[in-house]
Image (cartoon, rainbow, N blue to C red):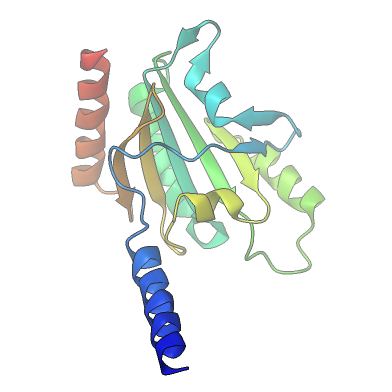
Amino acid sequence: MLKFSIILIFSILSGIAFSADDELKVGDQSPKFTLKNADDKEYSLEVLLKKDKATRKVLILIMGDHTTRDSGNKWAMELHKVHGKDERVKASMIADLRGLPFYVTERMVKWGVKREKTPILILLDWHGKVNQLYKTERGKPNIFIIGDQGKILYIYKGECSAKILNTIKAKIQDCLKEN
């Protein structure tokens, strides 16, 4: 019985340690997903990385929950200013909608997203599953830069600042030069 208990405790502790180290890292393959926008059109990671028959070079995912909407919009506007016309770069927001108040309906959310007219595609993560796959930090905007092969090139979790924006711009330019 003691031997079984020790094995059980070790297994539980190993699981806890493993889950803490289970963060996505630069160089990891991006988790695949499929989400819908406010018009119920489906988008997958593969679709976001494709442009007609060509492959995009960079995909920027801005992820966050309803508490980070303003910060996420700021990131979207800044990144759109820099790369909005570049066909090789695509940016998309993924809205984690798990924490919405019970009285906010799906119809209200879709109406609000359409009304806002953000310059980048907004995908709706109703149950937060994609945000869980990407191990996002709730209460902060999370930025993931993904290369054309689906590998994570850069991760940032926090507010938009000139310094970080310059770092992201440089990372994107490096990726575009490599390809």
